[in-house]
Amino acid sequence: MKTSMMVCAIYLLLPALVLSEPGNLRGTSIEDVEMDDLFSTNETDDREANDDILVNGTDDQEALRDFLNEASVLSSYTAARRRSRRRVGAKKCVDTVKANQCLMSRASKANKLWEPGWTWTRYEHSDAHLSSKNLRTDCSGFVGWAIRGCANGLDVLDGVKNGGPGRVKRKRARNFYDAFGPGSLGSRKFCRVEDFRQVQRGDLLVYDKWTQLDSKPGDSGHIMIAFRSPIPRGVTSDGKLVFAQKIIDSTANAHFDFLTFEETRRNCPKDGKCGAGVGYVYVWTDSHGRVLAIRLRGKTHRNELDCYAKKDGRRVDVPCYPQTNHENHNYRIGRLRN
Image 1 (cartoon, rainbow, N blue to C red):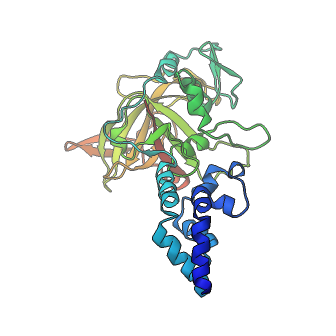
Image 2 (cartoon, one colour; image 1 turned 135 degrees about the vertical axis):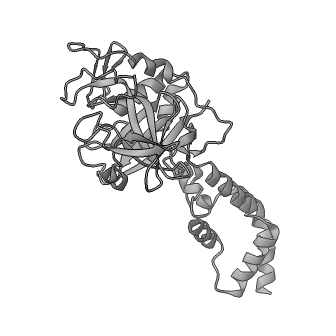
């Protein structure tokens, strides 16, 4: 009898249950609930949320659970949660997604020779001077400036969180790394390139120093813009693929030259203040194109090629594999979507 009365009561309450979110059932208004709270990204949370509504332990409550399951009252809500989970963060790039070239219209302005006495660029951890005639910023500031040249640039940057020590937060390499990821900090304005061999002009290469606490001063990593597709340099004796990658960035010191190309900041003194320009870095991947390590410059001098790889049966000089970078850096490649 008690169970029958409970079922009848549910028929009367059904419209309210269908129109209500679990936040409302727990006494919280929908306006007070953040979207990330409404849509869990973890299956355990889903089960716990359902248990909050459908507690078990008595015959009446089991009857209530059976009735709701049969009526599929929660089916639309569960589907919405699953759709939201799929939408969270940056997705993997599909083959048909081409890199948006809008950020290159600004970035390519830094493709000019650095000369002693020039004041148009300088490496500084600041966003106070961002123009092509006065570009004094670091790697993340440079990328942010380039993205602002896009029609939707400010909207894109809104999807990249601020971070760093102190009260004044700004977008750092680590924040771009997070924006290219699949989690709640990821941005759907980007997609994620999983295979380095598929890198295109305009893609963003970033590494995060996972050993560097965000609350402490110091570099969180480095971000740079691909100036072209990768150039294969061969295979190491232990099976790693090696690539020379032309990039444009703002950096403390010049990168590698490559063949007949000379780094635009080659005349910059080793004072850690170079700024924006174009050079080459070396990238190692596994056989599937997953980035294992990036070297920005040689160990004893910036063009040091102290190891070799094999390409078409020939020996090719390359830098030695940076094991420390492999151990201390996490790598991602982001592509700004059209």
